[in-house]
Image (tube, rainbow, N blue to C red; front, side, top):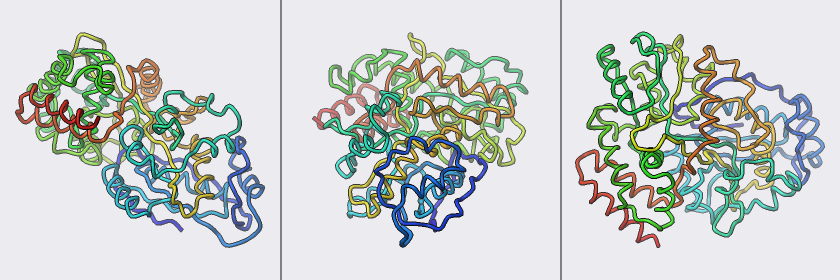
Length: 461
């Protein structure tokens, strides 16, 4: 039924499996009927599916590729979807984001690929937008008039192509730059307050280094360019709020003093040994997350708001090393003249392949993930904040400590106060800026590195 290729990754957890319908499977007809009632109790979903199905026939399937849902998330989502639509098999493939992007690029270039695919907004969505099914008429018919009012406006705006049409729809949003920390190790080291300034952060790192000589104070997976750019975006808001977006629009150059200051602060973090040696050669997932942080080989982890889901029962926290530990989260401490601000974007959106072999089934799965029970399930997983305004997690009581329960309202507040979007719109610019950041760490002159970013940007015009 399903063919899953699963890699180790962060943010996984287990929820109760939902009951499958006992009705005989029937072939799906279309995604014509609005299913706003789908968020009701799952016990009614089998009946709803029958009302939307056609006459009996051969069972269909829908092929879905993404980096999320994770393996344990799909273990909840798949039976819920197949209970709602017992005449459709969900075939899911998952890889970590870099592996998924490589697989998708090859498949789309050859005219193949999944029916439904995960999308990040910004550069990734722009890269694939011409291969994606326009979703305006699908959403209007499935969700009903005025459906957009029920979603975060910025999240929806990021899902449009250059013509202003939806080519993806948002599942959830996420924010950077945050630091997750092992509160148990903090407590044992006598640290009672999370750092708010860079000097306080340095002092915290030194205390931890003295207390735990065999444990990394802060682990950072900065191998991928986009993870570096997340940091640069958030950090730049401390030196010039909004300037990052002005540079993307071309109203100021990437050589502006605000970015010199940002890059200088970035380099200082490495010179001061805030991060472990070799950070720019380490992937965030699974290396920094699983092999360091949740293996109790690091006290702090540079990450985003989505990481909260990893603390639920069945997630990476419960791999043996950190079963009994408590965790917390704080925003990147202030190193510049302006207060720290999170940057926020649609983290997981879904899109339909124009060449989908099972397009009608893909429409039903999209509805399930965006407007139906799938959206609630993803919210319960705490791997992001739902883009649907009336959906909130029902699982906060699953956390075993107050510090962990506090993460969700804390990051939600930071998302509401964000400086702006997280993702750049052009992949080449992301690569150029990310490489420049890595080059500066290894000794390249900051002004020269930024000049190369500007040169790359000008070639994009």
